[in-house]
Image 1 (tube, rainbow, N blue to C red):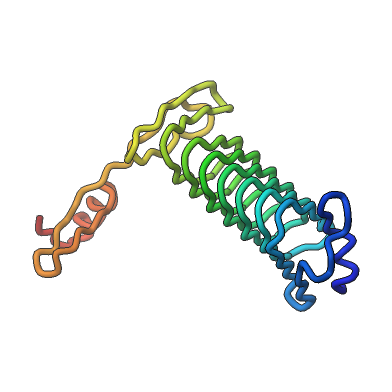
Image 2: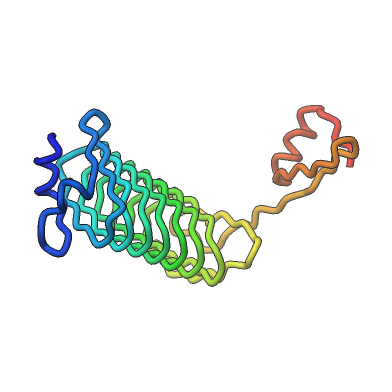
Length: 201
């Protein structure tokens, strides 16, 4: 699509964004603008990349990449990657990757990976991985359970319809020559020992 055609898909204060306020790369489907408060309608164009300011709203298809400021709202398909600031809202399909600031809300399907700040809310399907800040809890929908997370503790939830979780513990092995700490799970450590490898503590 041409830059002129893209212009009609991007509104600012209810009007098409001025052509001199954004760039559009037809070869890579990359939209770039430093402007805030944009409304972007790309819901039938796949594999787009967006670089914008804050407080933008996106309606897109799948396979998109976002690098934005804070306070944005995303309604996308599957397989998207987000790198955003704080206070964003995401309604996406599956297999998305998020790296965000604090105070974000996620409503996704399965297979997503989250690395966020504090005070985020996640409503997801199965097989998701979370690395979060503080003040987070887990509420399971398959079997009613609320799990209060402990700072610095890594857990794995039990299978579908089974309450509880497993704490993934680590042992530290010190390399005296290099002064490097190597952290592996106890299960992995035992597997190494069972394979005949000698571990010197």
